[in-house]
Image 1 (tube, rainbow, N blue to C red):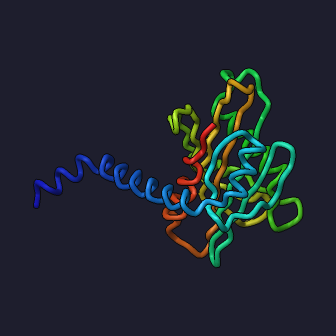
Image 2 (image 1 turned 30 degrees about the vertical axis):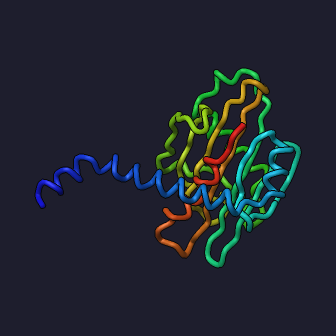
Image 3 (image 1 turned 180 degrees about the horizontal axis):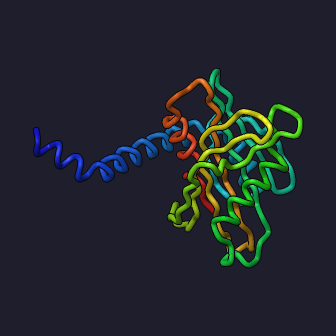
Length: 201
């Protein structure tokens, strides 16, 4: 038993990542089978990308370069935001500027429940950013907590920034969860992440 415990501790991160990735892949298969074809077609026509949004999502807001989808359950809501930025010098963008862009979209398009309130990134806690490859695309992933300026609301978010050099644009795909009655939001974050990971250009 002692040797098993030692081996588990030594490989804890690898085991956790293996189980996490397996969970994500299972959810992605379910998303593909239950995808809303109308919304998937809309996203492809508007942004030239493929992404599987499960049935139950609704288009909340739509502007020239921005759209916001929501899936409301009894005690939780999942939100997916897509924004395209026309930026030619993509190589000069750093992670701090990416967070700034996320916050600019939150202020412009994602209001809170009270007047003059809007979504922002919570910067009093760590905001984690790393570069990774998904579906043969190099992306910057940002994770952290969101809050509402002017109101007591918040929750976890996962954000993908894709530098699409072929079209001189920066594509932001942002997912955030609101589940105030749920202490453990990990399952909802994995579900949301499985949607984000389906994106392909």
